[in-house]
Amino acid sequence: MEIEANLEFDYGEVLSKIKGTSIKALQGTIRDVAKDMLNDILVRDFPAGRATKSYITTGQLADTICVEGDGLDLMIYVDPAKLSLEPYIDGWLGVHESIYGEDFREPLVEGLNEGGVPGSVIYPAGHSAKHFMQRAFQQYTKTFLNLLARELRGAGFEVTVG
Image 1 (cartoon, one colour):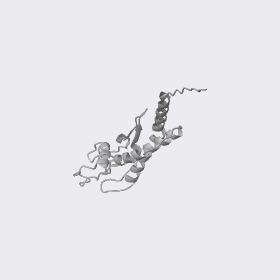
Image 2 (tube, helix red, strand yellow):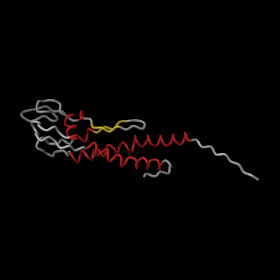
Image 3 (tube, rainbow, N blue to C red):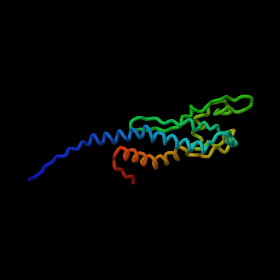
Image 4 (tube, rainbow, N blue to C red):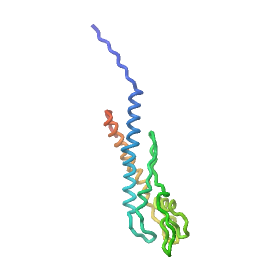
C-alpha cells in the first residue's frame, strides 16, 4: 500500500509576512532606536550650556532630529529650522544668527557636522568636523539588521545574522 501526499506552499504569504514584519519594525522599533542613537550623539557632542570661544551650546540640536518614511524606507535627518532664532540685542549675539543678523541655523548644523569654514569673524579657526551623521549611520548599520532579525524571530521565523 502506497500513501501519497501533496504539500502546497504559498511563498506569497510568507513574503507578505516578512514584509509586514519588516515594515512594522521600521515604523516602530528601528525608528525609535534611530532617533535615540542620533540624539545620544548630539547630546554628548553639544550639551546645553557648554561654552566655546564662539558660542554657548543651547542643547537644541538634539531636538532637530526627524525620522520619516513609510513602507520599507526610513529617512533620518536633522532639520535646522527646528532651532530657535533670536536676534542680536543690546550688544549680545543672537541665537543661531550670524553677526550680521542672518539666519545661521542651516550653516551651523552643516558646519558642526562637516567642519566650519575657517576665517569667520567670531571663530577664525573654524569648527572641527564632528561627523555626527556619519557616526550615527555607522551605528545604524551595525544595529538595524539585529533589530530586524529580532522582530522576524518574534514573528516565528528562524533568522541568523552573519
